[in-house]
Length: 215
Image 1 (cartoon, rainbow, N blue to C red):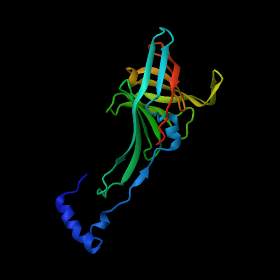
Image 2: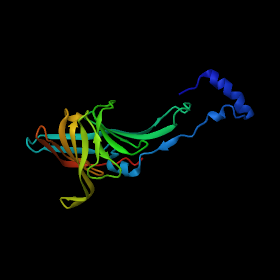
Image 3: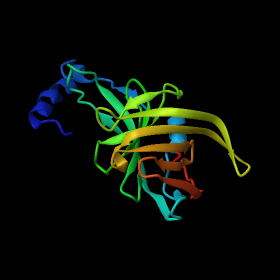
Image 4: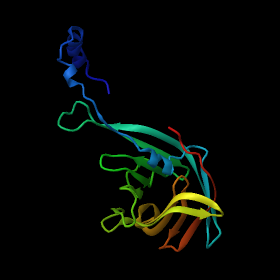
């Protein structure tokens, strides 16, 4: 953000004679970056796609990444009453209009599923403390929560070995009209199974291609 012209005129003489007048306003931010192990979970890039099949009806659906980006949120460096922070965030957009939000705020990393582009409403997929069975976070209103039900450090499907499968329950998933939904998520692959318990629907991943962003 550009500083007021008057402010710049006041600072120029101080800079020329190298006094401390304006330089005292310089502040070094506390930077919080998204950890690599978070990126390894689901920092998907364009070229990534998934095909799902609903096991009861046989309906086929597909999702693909349209854009992924990494950026910083920065607090006001001139606000001396509050800490000066720069917090890195990642957004991975998919064709349905949803996006995944990966961030590393002060106090712990998280991965969120946001309902609509530009909306702050969403449900947390993964909670890192590190990951533990029984972890729970409020979601979807006063009675809503997300809880990690199971963690499999190593999992094998069709002779292929995967690293870390997490099963979690969102009892009021606001991306599913507040239905109770169970997710199974593979590190580096994404959602492999989504079971809507309320509607008795179950979507299974049948094909996919993954391209992780290397930023």
